Length: 379
Image (cartoon, rainbow, N blue to C red; front, side, top):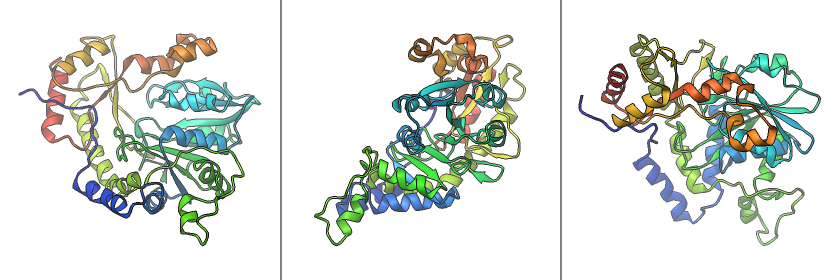
């Protein structure tokens, strides 16, 4: 087949998003305002939660969630050892300690059996990462730790669900990303979700410097010249109305995007099933997968090349691949800080060394998928 160039991920944006951005540009209201409120309302409705609060990224969403829960020095937060580094970093932002937990290499999510060994009297929260769009086994986590708050890192999981409950409503707080590698994007951006009124009120204040009312409320109120009070110390984590306008359009496409990705994920699973050295994603019917990525694992005991060599050869064919993500305990900073051995979390280490994401996104066409499958078979 003729060589094709296929990116690991590409956002789907176009005329609708461009037209949407014109409204705030023409109105002059560019900071957080009516378009952000509209986006928040639609996101809450889609994910069946009482509150959705837009912020600048999933990282800031995670940070605000820990602040809202009162996490601070002396506390411990359990974090899967295989996740993006920000899941751990936000714990340190609060002066708390990261306690890593191993993952199940078959799902890439937190291993409940290892989780129970990590809990101490100082454990104040558990980061349940829904990696690559597959929700963590929340029931198993709650069975092990029934009284510990759960913060869902749903950066990859917009639109995903667990036993019929959408991501974002499974724990005390949920956090989402709208980075361009995610199913829907606002460029950068994030969302905090919760069904707890008090937590929602606190997050709303925290994202806007701790102000008692929003900028929009003040400017549209009877005395816009009076500055609000600041009852708590907060941050500038506000999403702009430019992003909110794009988010409204993108969210309207989310279910269609997931349906398309699910169809091509099934295509991959059918067409690649005969390759015994390539382990494909598996999950039960209890899950609605968000398919942010299609992540496989390479069995180097019988593969024609190492994982990295396979990635290099596919790159030569124009096919972008990536490791699923990284094992945070293997990063130099965390290894030094906590004196962690690479072998301390074997599941995370295995995922770090052998996971391989292949392209799955909504800009791809059938010829792209055929080319990828044929290229893998020809290795």
